[in-house]
Image (cartoon, rainbow, N blue to C red; front, side):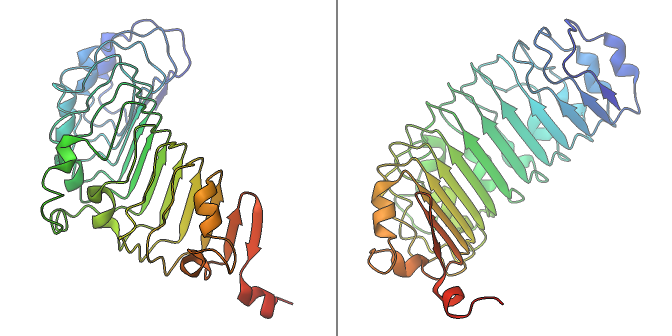
Length: 298
């Protein structure tokens, strides 16, 4: 284990590649580092690499494909894309988090080759315009977080939208089946696209959407049969909820006037969809499940 986080290092020594048995390397929050030696790619036993907060790194090492044991990778870079580093060959990678990449416009092709990837975070990448086409084929992916990407429009990204308007069965067999989805501060998002929810209709348990000021619909034809927790904040134009949420346990709506009105107890149009939830909070007001009122716990 080697923890260099928060240090004033400007250059990482080349000899770091000689630490052949190193499994954990934390270089996070080192704002003076601009380049990593390619010798770091010799660390074939390395399982965890934290580079988040190193937002001055001009380019990632070119031979990262050889870091065959890497399971957890948190990174930051000034690059416009992540092509040419072999990230798609990291077959052991389970968690990939991309933070604060101010110039990043695109990730990398071949992301579907990351057969062990179960968690993907893409946060504060303000110039990101699209996601890789192969993302919908990452069958192991369980948790997806996308936030503060002001140019990203999931509903119109060409790489992910092709054919979905022509064949409603397209994407069903891709294996894409999330359990948790968190979306925040995507001002261009108007509707959640089919590729994102359709394959996860029977697996998604937690859905959080916040700060999407132009979002108008959650693709209401979806039946989210496994959804247990739904939280929506600061989406003033949102007017619809999924049709069926039979396992819903927790619902929280805040600063979403249209949806709050539709979920009003007994009188709201969408009340029958959510009435069975054990905890409902609308703009700070908690609605207790009727069955708890009838049979209160001693």
